[in-house]
Amino acid sequence: MTLSWSDLKIGDNLPPYTAGPLTRTHFVRYAGASGDFNPLHHDETFARAIGLDNVIAHGMLIMGIAGEAVSTWIDVKHLKKLSARFLSMTAPVDWDDPENTTKRATIVITAKIVKIYEEERVKMIKADIVAKDLQGSRKLDGYFLAAFP
Image 1 (tube, one colour):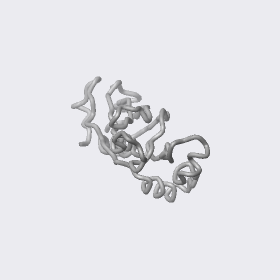
Image 2 (cartoon, helix red, strand yellow):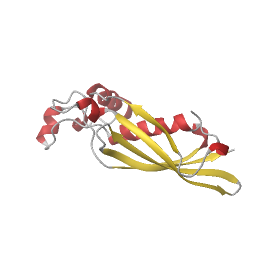
Image 3 (cartoon, rainbow, N blue to C red):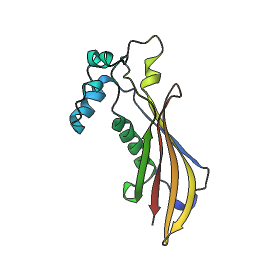
Image 4 (cartoon, rainbow, N blue to C red):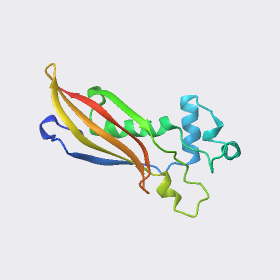
């Protein structure tokens, strides 16, 4: 779904974007792509040694998923800014947890239009974004700005 300026209203919710469930393999593949081989993201022994129950996703992997969501809502050439802050960690689906780990490792990105305006004759929108797992744990929040022709 690509957004159309004429159809947008403040308060509109964009269709949710779902990714995952994320596995340890996703984390390792992201490490290879990003060059971030911190063992915190792939080595369970290391993660436990520093006090975690398991490895965790790279924060930028979650932000990348948020960016992927934004690119389903708008044409990337219209994106002017994507900003996010990290809120909580994401463990992989293979975590040995009595709760349903699929819920912890599936990420849903939602967005809400909070501002529609013109700046120097350019039609702009601002939308707040939130990434949560299926248990409701917030992984990141932020916003994006987009310009329309």
